[in-house]
Structures are given as structure tokens and as C-alpha cells.
Image (cartoon, rainbow over all chains, first blue to last red; front, side, top):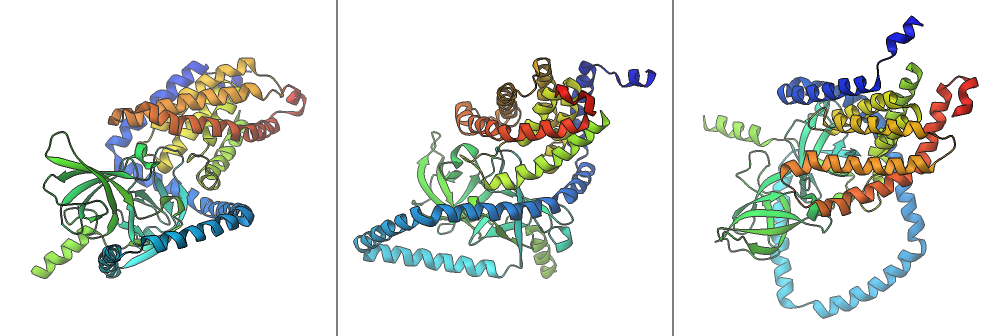
Length: 290
Length: 170
């Protein structure tokens, strides 16, 4: 009986103890970020292999659901769409548009060439953030594969995000559409700089915000935004997306716009990590000058 | 007590993995159900305040350690919810599944609001109506839907921890 009494802490006391522990942890994690990170890494190392296997099963189930749906509906839809496309194509093909397309494609081609000079590593997306408020995900490559913090992540021809935490065999990526994300970008054609900010509230409509564009900038809808030379984390010249809805701010000094990213964030399964960080790049240049 | 905590840990790991992987592929309206919250509330509802708090603390820390930027914030929110759900233990009824569903719905709503206040309102995102309609409400509905299945599983697992003669009351 005595032993039993020992365990009998009242629920309120337990609540107070837990709340105090939480608050201490919050303060502690602000103060000693590095120590905390090593502990986080060990938990991550434990969970990631399990997530990896379950995720592949999830992907499989999902794709098999997709097949069920596609049987009839999609064939009909496809037929209709094909007809429509043929019509629209005939109507819309004009010389000016071709010309526009040619110039944008040339730009894209150049950008693509730009990426190929960077060393890259492919990685698979393993799991996603556990709540609906942020856009972080885990990939299956870590420090053992040469990944470091602040490396840029791309998919296809566009920027996905940046590595924000690295474990032995996993790392976490903050995507550019995350509410906390901030990228300094510039217009590929005019070199006007701007800030690209992720935003949860506009994401469902398919765009994020571009802010602090100079009022003098001669820009039009549909211009490409790439990462800027000014940024200290992102390598220069990676395509982010296309602008639309350009409006001038009430202060008449700057403009804001919408940006639709080139990457489809709902269907990310493999990404490329550029294994070169901006800082090491600069260091190399400095040693070259010496 | 020890048995129940071990059970909670196993359930926690399973729920966490499912939530971040399998359910991410099965998103409805862009949201994932909050399985950790189902576990916390069920544990408080089935076993009382203390279990609620302990499970909540584990769930919160897990969430913080893997995806959070500040350790302890999720844990704090979960602990408050775990304690409150312990009051549900007073009206615990065997084989009644409507009370826990409502409880889980209310708690998820509270979780969403607390999370909004701590993480978004403090950063100056004032458009509460938008977040409520697009994140909190869908999450509540989907979580309640998932709870129909998961609550039964959780009850079954906790039943295993009770000695056979006491199993009747579960």
C-alpha cells in the first residue's frame, strides 16, 4: 500500500509540473539551439527509416486509388479535353504568341544550362510536416551523403526550397511556399530585385506573394522571377516562378505582385539537391583572387 | 500505469508515422487528420487526467522534436488539451462512441485556435476567418472522421492493459 501512495500525485500537480517543463523547454531551446539540434537529430534518425517504408506503401495505395478512378471518368474526360485542345490550338496559334514563346523558351533554356553546372544529388521525399500549417518535408539523404544546411533544393526546372536541418540519413527541407519562407529574387529580364514570401492564406489559390519591387521596374505579367545574386543562401539564377497581378503599394515607392511557382508542390516525390552552398562558392572565389 | 504508458508510446509511434506518411497521401481539402490529438483525447477520456497529461506530453514532444522549431510549444498545447479531456473521464461510458467523437472535435478546434494564436497571430497574420475556414474546420471534420476508426482501435489496445476481471468496465 505504501508504494501505491507514492505514485498518487494529483492530476493538477501533474499538470502544473508538465506546463512548467514545457515552458522551461521553450526557453531552453531558444537559448541552446545547437545542443537541442543534436537531440532532435537522434529522434529523427530513429523515425525516418520507418516513415520511409510506410510512405512508399502510402504512395502505392494512393496511386492504385488513382487507377480505379481513371477507368471511366478520365477516359471520357480525356476525349473531351482532346477535342477542346485541338479547337483551342487552331484558334490561338498566332505569330506574336509564337514569338513570345520562343523568347521565354530561350530564356528557360539558358536557365537550364545554368543549373547543369552545379553538382546535384537526387533524393526521395520521405514524409511531410505533421500539421496543416507549415510546408516542411523530409528527404532520405543526410550528412552521410554530403548534404549540408542551407543547400538549395530544386525539382524539374524550379526552386523547391532550402535544407533547414540535417541528420545522418535524412534532412528537412523548408519549401518556398512555407509561411515562414523568404527568398530574395529578381526579374530575369530586367534584374530588378524583389522579395518572394511564402504565404499560407494565398496558397490555396495557387500563388505566393512578391513584395518590394521598385516602382521604376519595367515589368509585365508573365515575367520570370529567379533567385537573386543578393541572396546569401540561394544560388543565383534558379527559376522560382512567374508573376501576375502587379499592383503598386499605397506608399507609391514599391509594387507587390503574385507569383505562381513552377514546381507542383502537391506532387513532389523526388527532388534534386545542389551540393554547393552559396558561402563555399564565395570562399572559392576569394581564394582564386588571392 | 506502466503498461498503459508503454501502450501509449507504441500507439504514439504508429499514429505519428501514419499521420506524416500514409495520411499525407490521403489528404482531403488539403488537410491531414490530427491522429496525435485523437490519441491524446482518447487517452484522457478512457483513463483520466493523469494519463491524458502524460500522453499529451509525449505527443507534443514528439511533434516538436521532429518538425517544430521551438521545443515545448506543441507539448504545451497538447498538455492543456490532455488535461481538459480528462474531465471527459467522468462521463465515460462503455461502448459509447458519440461522446468521444464530439470531445475530439471540440479538442481539435481548441488545438487549432491555440496553434493559430501562438504561431500565426503572434507573427501578425490577422485573417482568422480564412484560417478557420480553410485549415481549422476541415481538420476538425477529417479528424472526427478518422476518430471513428482510431478511437475503437485505441480502446481495444488499452483494454489489453487491464487485468481480465476488470475488463468488463471497458
